[in-house]
Length: 337
Image: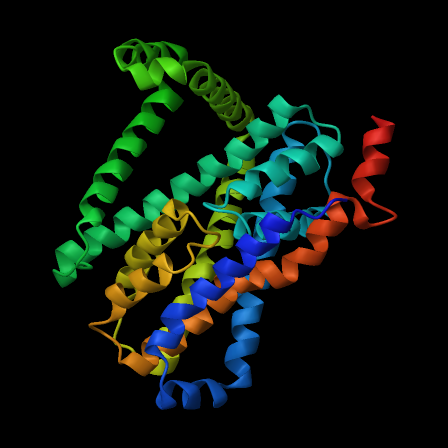
């Protein structure tokens, strides 16, 4: 396998830049907090991230079963770890989807079906994130009368409501007629005409993913949604546990809304893992609630388990899945198809 030098340089640059906000907030008190961190906290956060990966492996196992592809949990877990590394190491996590497509193709799925599986994962992600974000947002508005001082949250809320309505309509009504109606209305835009074929291909795979989910029994769909919740909830709990450890007076709904914004910032960044921009947004969101030392400590711990974790633990599995392993399971399964 050829090693792409630019990829490694970009990855190292992202790691270096992502440390800059931590060094900015770092002082003697923060270093003392890190040196005195309890082993129980580290073990607890590690257990949360392992639970997150197990839930994602279960979701992959359940969705693949819907397209008659049997992936045992023991095989799904390293595949998830490899794909998480690809996502953490590329801008806007673009490498995760590409890695899943390659790995599922090697296990016998054609590209269209593999893309449908990937979009089914994305749809359940979207449903869970929209649900928990809107619930937390309404709780803050109704009971605490407080919100992060970031204007983009209004756009994010509007986008969430609009996406929910569109998904509901596509799920329950004549899906292809809705898609054709959207297509006719966007034809007036020149940029849409240029990318119309790509967008049509995406919607075709999107509808295939919806059909895949609709064909599953309710109990199966419930398990898939619960596994999506099991994937995301530990990631929110990591930040909550770190806030509790430093004694920060930050409510759970505020943490949910803030981390949703941080995830969005990561997706919009041009560097892997939202290097630099996520750290700056973190300081903006929690600067009024935490001291400088607490911000440095919690930011370092949060990034350790939501970015560096995927890089360092997922890297060996990525290269194994990509083909460095002599007994690569995907090769054997692909030959037998």
